[in-house]
Length: 131
Image (cartoon, rainbow, N blue to C red):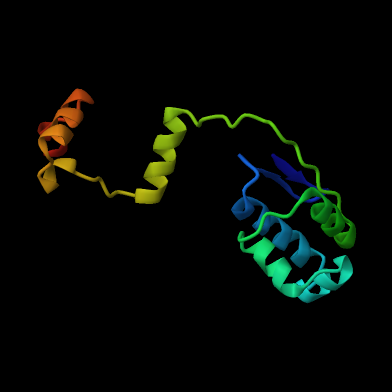
């Protein structure tokens, strides 16, 4: 799914509250509104806006339309797109960015027989980690 307006495009893998909420919050802040201001414009409560923005509630299409209108922005939803799995290189890049120089040694924690067999089947020998 894609939430899009003239300044923001946010590609969402699924219609999950935790992904939509931050986009709504960003649009509200760009409009210079408080949660209470937005709630007043669309006829709901500040608590309802808070639940949407924190990902505790998934707003329906009618409510999203009212939010877009109140913010003076268009929100385009594209449903049914399949999420592309990142390439192995992209996944490795993300892991390296998150871990930095740290390298986990699965052999250091004394793996069970099943874990050992799995490591060896993947070519992850003790020697590879003893550098």
